[in-house]
Image (cartoon, rainbow, N blue to C red):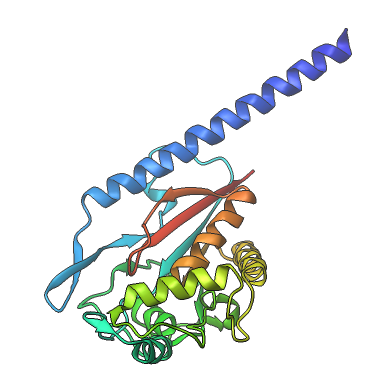
Length: 258
């Protein structure tokens, strides 16, 4: 009987801890939502592009946090400084794909990500120029950051064969992505399976960094960030701010360690 009572007690404590964690995560997400309601927009060329955002500081919480709060921000790069309107031939689309990996970004008029204490933030960036330029805009050209090809976007190839059409660039890039996922005409690009394994490696790098610094930021790419997010959630991290997939979209995940 005592053994059964012990098991029931342990189960009850575990259930309470789980419920407490759930309530704390909900409260943190609500805090981010409230911060977003009052956040102003940063502009580029006179147009609003993204709301200001920051990591959550424990002093901002109106409830106790039992344990160590870690945060990871996944930031998509800014808008590449490249023409995307009109229709493109196949050869023009191939050139666009090359240029897309080399150009800088349309730099907003002011920083959109506020870092209150840079010493407590570990910054990572993709080696592709649009992401590296974004990281320098967000955190400053002189800030310490780890730039690595591990964080580059999932690779695609325009392929060698295409109809003689003039289409919007989205048509060409979407077709290239579909062919790549299906393993068609990859032209030496990594496979989809390899890219997913790389996203898993990238997620582990960020988690390891969060053991040393409680706040981690990655400036990378839409598809890679999506798969990193999936891996982080599998490792027990929780999305508390969903920034979407647009340029400079910032998703924040948290984990509480007892």
